[in-house]
Length: 290
Image 1: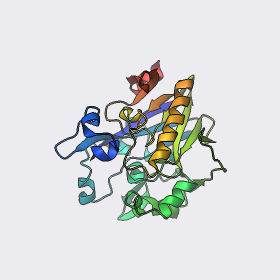
Image 2 (image 1 turned 60 degrees about the vertical axis):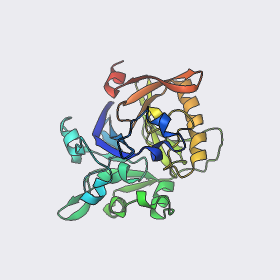
Image 3 (image 1 turned 180 degrees about the horizontal axis):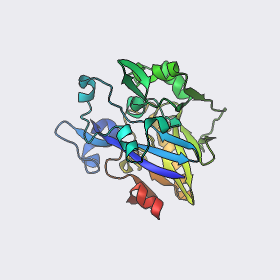
Image 4 (image 1 turned 120 degrees about the horizontal axis):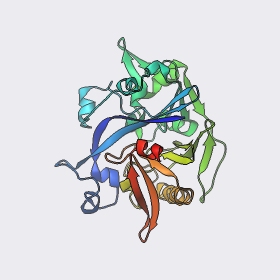
């Protein structure tokens, strides 16, 4: 197995929205805001090469939106997925699977591109995977979440015939999180507080367990339990999911991979007098070499 971090650039979001009820005087020390209260965040995907499969987890924002849309997010240091793959001697056609944690625009935008003035899937030979609850939510969004689901990111997936919906078996527990099988070395933890049916890929790499955190923990700054985004649809559910996950992660020595942390790709965890916190931070390459 090979793992590669695919960093497609940075963007900005409102700091208050990203840290919810936590006061700015506190969160500003973690991710300093600019004069418009905006903080930098990463758009970081993960490529997993397992046997003949080349699995891309999430796809960033892409570049097909108009200047007005992109202007809201102040993208910087942008790099296309194609350029990132080229550094690994790979092409877009080589990707066999795109595993989408959820369908918010900053996670699925790169899954669809404009080709010959038409919207087409970016990875012509890939199967696109999304959970059934998330697909249904994207098709029939609530008013609060609707702006995060853009039809140009979602409809072409269905029209391509390359979309696979992951059905979830019945599950209801306040004390544990549902986990489903994806490949021999990848399972997915299912969480519902940020949005219904979000998947957190859990990867077995040699003697390590690496979890792609998506928007359950966008950054190391979100590890303390009360640090829940204003974007989360069910913040109290997120709080409970974070608590369960962090206890499990600490017990089993999971290594966390962050999609949005602008400085830290990965971290380990430790128990402190204030609760579970980041222990050491490191790049994915440093983690794999240890």
